Image 1 (cartoon, each protein chain N blue to C red):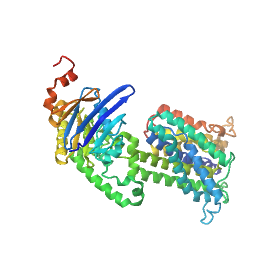
Image 2: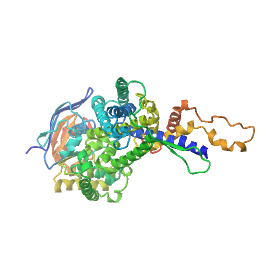
Image 3: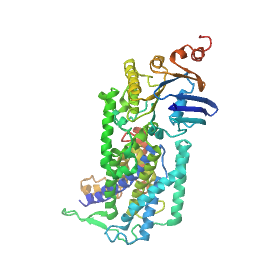
Image 4: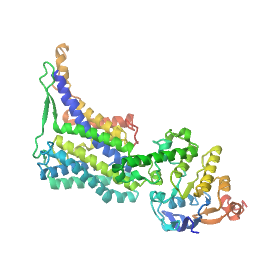
Length: 334
Length: 256
């Protein structure tokens, strides 16, 4: 039974953590694509910016959370969301809108977003340094060890405090997004613009405002994903940048332009990664006595080594593009 | 009387191709004005300029005396200037009814404030919009397909939906871009009837691009003939049909 707990810790929990972060990240990518029709490479660095804002605020007011008993980083998150939303709008006004006004091709926007990536990463490095820093400045990162009430189980299920916040915030973000897109006029106007921008304008929808709202939403979601990722490990200027490709894979797997597809895609990619690096040997060990003698159980039996984890999203991406290019939920083919 | 649409000396070129050359047209309030001309005469380009879908190079467009040159389409919409598309546009992932409901009278929910602060008022307004959409969909005879995805409607039904869209708000001028193209005869009768009713009962002004001469003859007075990006002649349909210049432009030299 200890092996089962090992599986829960290393696959169920780890996969949900990775999946949640990919999911929130991929929603941002997919929203930008559905409204503005380009692949926004600077999204990961918007995530880092959000986490950086939290780091900055937490360093300034390290005691803020203790009064109400939550980590200071969580207390600062709403403010970081607002600041990142603002940054997203400013970036759009400064870099993307002038290009849009000239009616450039999507690839030009993609290159521009690569430029924004470099600017953001440089700026964050300039102020935060290149090393890792914990978002838990004055708080302690709680680790919960839940012993299962089963005979003979010595290993506890381990879950950390930031992981619990991550799950809660992911669920809230998904519900909030669903409510926003399906119930509010603004959300419906976003869907309308994604469907047919010319008709949206001819129907009196102010598409410039929809673009601004989209960026606020994208910036806010990026701040959530970036902060939760940095809380789970440590803040680094290139932390989110390294998950840019899995996030894109998640958006494409889910069907580009489909917010809920992106969430599904995030979990597919997240679980695929953790399952691929999981040491299956552990699960087989209890049956060692029943195996034929010529079969020696190796110490490590994973599909890929941990250091090659990054190939998994690529493999899924290739498979999806070959067999179902529109993604799980029918999205736009790119 | 000020014309409701006053296009003054408009020029538009795509690269080296001059599509609209010093073109001036007036549309009188309450009229159904036809805009005809051979292919490539610049009808659709002129339409797109008036509707705010294309920037012009020089010239002026006035709506009821107000300068609306280069206004975006959504701002014109709120001034009561609406258009339909030559190739019917629809929000394909929404139902026919939802398509109409995307066109609210005064969009309260679209300012950020009202989304968050007055959900009840927004809901009330939403109900009003729905009532209006139900009336409109009945008027255009699409009640039986109102819950179909708009992407699955036939070409003719999509055209009717386009017309319905213009009825969701208090329009002053509607630009109809080949609304009859691809619509079968029975449906066309409905369409023409609806346009006449809107003109007579609600006082809509129409500017109509059309290739179907029967429809032009039945609906439009006056008719403007565009050729090579400028006005060739303007007059009643009889005058146009007997004008040798027009016949030459349409059928080539020697046809008359």
